[in-house]
Image (cartoon, rainbow, N blue to C red; front, side, top):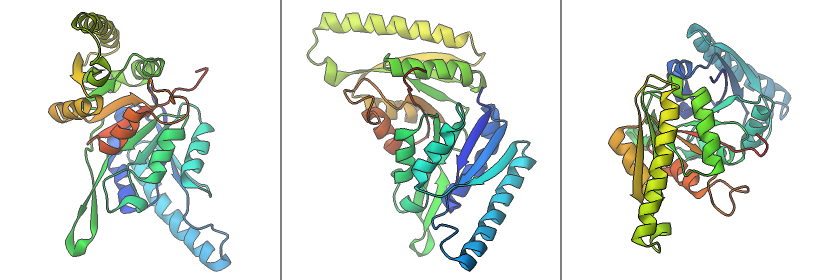
Length: 295
């Protein structure tokens, strides 16, 4: 079960939306949340303005902390200075097993629905699981950006993605130990890549279908032993990312769970192409689970 979460906030309107999901964090098993803020300007930049800025930020953070306390969650807040993405990754690394909660965008991505650069770097480099809450930005009155959560629920229906790689196996173990028991329904999904399979014979494709179906059924039985919630398996053939996006839309998934790395050649260096694409395009919340050698 996930006990400790680190909620990274830039105190923007988009960042404040993360506080609307406190009850959902509790459903995941979170008992303690540390609020982490990295100021845009160093507190030491100017003696007077630095002091007044810190007082203002502390008041904002205390207000957020009080909301968590009222919800029955142990809380505290921390200030760190530096490059936001690196600070978040480094601070989380000091707390093994803690879940990073971050919005898909904040100050830097108000006018577009792509994820912000800070979020992208955190997903790519974190050694901790990262829960990215999808924030939608629309244009309101006077051409001002208006932020809203794509889904305030997390636990209603989760899609657990697998490509049967070692990284996906790590995600499966994480989900069965820390996540599945707290979900209302689960789908285990594998997409046979039609681009990769196009040179295979019909007999080879049928053989792959049988092998993958058997794997999915075994994993599904394992998950069912951990929860009373309905668990189903999905085996589709097509282009991977569009197939996943279609399933998210059809099922109304409130969460997708996936590895940050897949089977690609650069899997130990950069974020996998599927994870990167879904971080940008998936119209729901995403839980990215990293693979750490030796874990």
